[in-house]
Amino acid sequence: MLNRQSEGGIRYNIYNAALFLGPDGVPPERDATYLKGRLVPFVERFPFANFLFRLDHFGWIPWERFFGYGLGTEPLPFTLPSGDSFPALICYDSVFPGWVNRFAGQDSGQDSKQGSGQGSGQDSKQGSGQGTSFSSGTELSSGTDLTSDSGRNVGFIAIITNDGWWGDSAGHVQHFEYARLRAVEHRQWVVRSANNGISGAINPRGQVVHKTDYWTEDAFRQTITTHPYPTLYARYGDWVGGISLLFVLFGLMRLRYRPKQP
Image 1 (cartoon, one colour):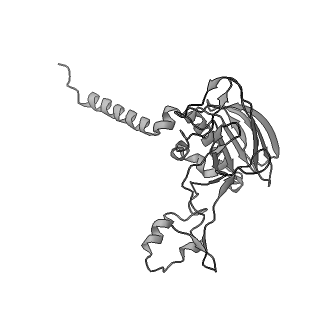
Image 2 (tube, rainbow, N blue to C red):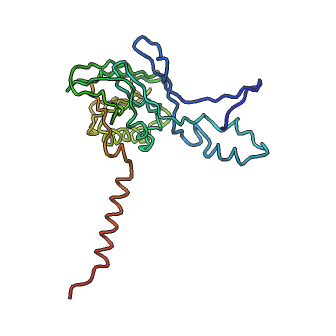
């Protein structure tokens, strides 16, 4: 693996990461850090860095000086004290449905019960030039039993991002729209916090329930519900679309080459 090396010979790496803190401000003993798995080419990581590093058998190029951030490979969701889990997608992660799908079906390892019509209270604060935080407290009551490990899934999706480098362009708007696609694909709430916009909350239908303006200091509170059961798309991804496309092509071929009626 391509790593950096200090003057003392210690090998290490630098990651773009998310840290999970509990209500007391202390991270849990395990699974408290998620490493970004989809890095922006050239901006965060040189494309095909590991492959090119292996080709350079003679060490002619100091790859460790400019290859960029380390690449996270494990889709690690965070788990709330209630037992509900969620992925903390970082910026570019949310653009890739296949990467988001890898979080689906992962069991939080805890038993929980979700009450109908109740869910997580999400506070998000967003301001120009300021950091971003999510604090959550999930209200649970007797209802649907989720103690079975089969079919468990993350309950909602969280996205943290820095869209300031887009400037006053359509880039940050399009990036926000990708979050709506993830909500529809997984039939889950998406809460998005950007340090300078656009922050917002999106319901499982992809409808924007709340949205802040770009580069405007703002704060809002939104109650959401969790849905810890993977959808068909979450389970099988683009295979559904691929098979559907084959059926369409097969139908077109039959129409094209069917015998003409006399």
